[in-house]
Length: 304
Ligand SMILES: Nc1ncnc2c1ncn2[C@@H]1O[C@H](COP(=O)(O)OP(=O)(O)O)[C@@H](O)[C@H]1O
Ligand SMILES: [Mg+2]
Image 1 (cartoon, rainbow, N blue to C red):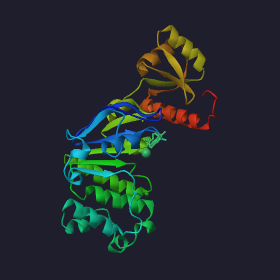
Image 2 (cartoon, rainbow, N blue to C red; image 1 turned 90 degrees about the vertical axis):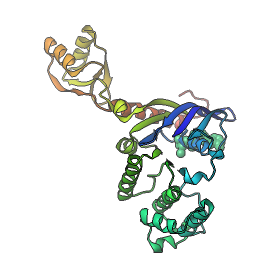
Image 3 (cartoon, protein in one colour; image 1 turned 45 degrees about the vertical axis):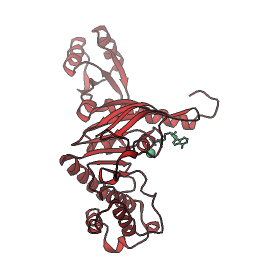
């Protein structure tokens, strides 16, 4: 169990993480989703005891990460796959970790096999590894101590489609066997396919959290008519709020049946009428991403 309460991190007046609270439960994959710069890595570094928070607390199984004896046997962490001694071989890196944790060297071979790094690859220096190979090595390192909790920061970066598929299977199995997984990504799809619980972060704050089903739940109705403005007028007259949706139609908070009735009564032919499934999360995420982009592109002194 990972628990974060009121976590805040400021750097010289800039708030990177703003009052963030969440819990990751055993038996579930918790997806930590947010655009670049949202505060995911900072939050994870605080959980791993690498960055001190300005306010709030983060605990793993009820204690500070730094107070866990032999932490690698309780929490497997992969924050930056390239943060390894480039001159060491993959096998050397795992062997040093195994020695540090007091594990037999047979565990190194097991992990190399698990992440499909061949004996030849394991003998190569990490500076000659692709990013995908580094991620595999990092996952092997995180799993080495057979921990009950895994925390991985953007582990899918650099993996090819087969590698991503493999990793999803691995994390699913791990959670099904009762493990706790916290996994971050800046890609909605990545999180959507693997996570049971989703935490969405933007500009340092949590903007949504819940089970995947809750967050992807039908969010009202999407409707498209030949004459959208006439339909909007009819819906408003019937007390149904309608707003233009990105894809040339309207979005309402009511059911497709209610919208259909209004359109029929007003004699307005419809081109499309369906539950606006999952679009809520995607739109929110696009908005977050867009506002992040805007900030980056806005010249200093100009209001976004
Ligand atoms: N050591 C630091 N000093 C100053 N700003 C930092 C530092 N670390 C992170 N930040 C800033 O905090 C914000 C969140 O960064 P980060 O947690 O890496 O985001 P994410 O992992 O979601 O992409 C970014 O704006 C980043 O530039
Ligand atoms: Mg990051």
